[in-house]
Length: 271
Image 1 (tube, rainbow, N blue to C red):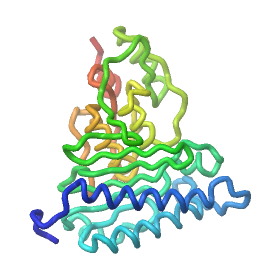
Image 2: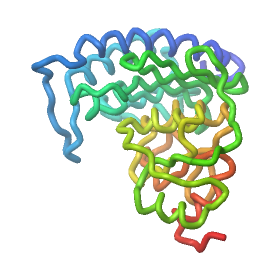
Image 3: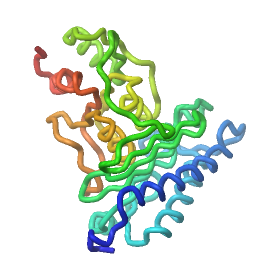
Image 4: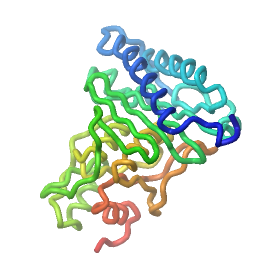
């Protein structure tokens, strides 16, 4: 499968990962709000539950069983051979439960996140939020959808809710006057927060440094296909499936907000 002409279409890969995400979400729901959920902590003090591991193992077996030539990158399986996934024609980029802290706390804003990357860019992505009964999907050139309804960027209203660091949102509010800027309530799942921008529920969100490919890849193409930008501080699109899978500060925003938000991140004077 090394020759790109032999690869499935992005829509075909989307069908695969959509079905897998739904089943993975069903597995996660078997653990959701369980009274004795097993939880441990990684070296960076971020939690991981037995549900994360169960979902990740299911997706690893199912997706690579269907696409044995693809690479694999996920939060919960050690990246023991990065050169193999980089050399693969496409790579699955997976967060089995994005928003683990919310999941453990019994809150509903978490999702199964699956992206497919080719040549450093996501070409298909799905976010399945079973507790919210929401599914976001996108394939390259095919648009983005939430529960089957197309997503497209619309003009900002009188008020723009923006997620992320409060001090950055306050600075943005002082400089951007076309809409009233307000800090959005905290959303623990970064992927879902980006999907909210794609759906027009948020005007934008700041993304602090040290997010990872698995937090972003699926949400990235959903945002892009909806007409929303996700960019690094220099205005470039993030690249995925490289040697380094952590990112510097990012901005995801409505086109009208992207410039002012980037100015906040880079510390330049707005206006």
